[in-house]
Length: 519
Image (tube, rainbow, N blue to C red):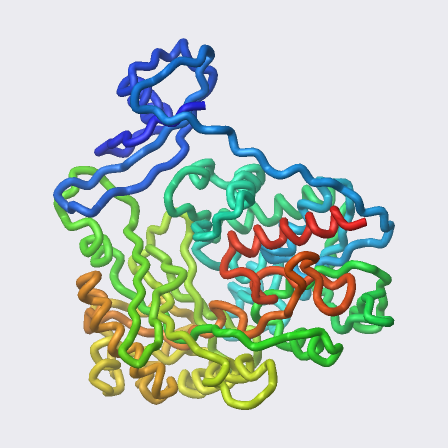
């Protein structure tokens, strides 16, 4: 296999046209190739007067020969799984987010039939319940944007980019394509699926797992773990007890009642750093201009950004889960709390861009000695936001200019908040702790120097964003991936071992392999 790199194209072309141009540049005739596909596509916008797509194309030649400028590459192969498991006990997967789904998928593809327990509804019913909450403010605490089939990432932009270098990152992308994702996620520099596609893909994955002998129990919460002499022997769902010797805890970052239960069962859990902040919204056309300028001769996709600043007080402030052409979502899972998140459809064709703007929080900021102090810190802030929003799941929101000036917003300008059920014009200086306000204000001004317009006085901050990561980690052995209770495998974002769809899915695969390879 050879790789043809540095294919610069200043137009939106079909894949076949790109491949033809690459072959022409490297003087390869079509009859010489067995196969060819795009390996990577990125946008080079460093010079706004000369923006272009940069492609790399992989080609398998019928007869090997030296191609000047091409790079020889090896086909990526995944480690062979040496299945040693002999136990006939059903494997229990708690949670059907990316970690749980990819764990279950790996298990069924290797001959084992797990039972997936999910407190929320299946994805079709979940969409209806979430839509009803957005329209009416009637919150279902079991099925919402945090809980239900597909996990919290189902209602997001579906971003699949990651700094993780695991070989299984490519495997995750291939599996998404296998179940209906656009093939372009295999080669674009910053792949995304979109909520509209994720809903269908998650359902396809579930139906496949069931067809191979797996089982799903929706609207079924695991309420207790049965432990005997340091080993897991079963789980409880209310009054029902299911015997098992293997439990994967892929519970997500919002399962607060489960965190409490885990702590009560003497499973080791420790606090970790997390982040809080707000969603910041700009007009998408302003983000496009900031990133691309206005001289590009061909249409480009909605622009993205990823920004970070280290404030003078030593705190990091950064953007996260940036959603081009998206909307800010009502993401509460507990009554009388307000939580925000961002979402985009695949087309990313909304009027506004939004991103989380976050400040790091350390365990010592949260007070108390409980491993769950960070969780209680999050909860208190969410309740305060609920009160500030007017007690009806409206979110407190403020123009950036007013926030920097410390005055209450009374009306919005060119950027209209997208959060539903609605927003309450507020003063977020009264919501956040002092160190958060100090860091956010300094950072907004400094980040504007990196991307002009970020500190636009009409940009909107909608609060509060608290669920970007888990405030705890369920400890596990580095070699076995088991907790201190034999047979329990903490997994994914909620357990503190992932930070998004990709890394959670990869962790699910790794845990499944450990289970399969254990005698």
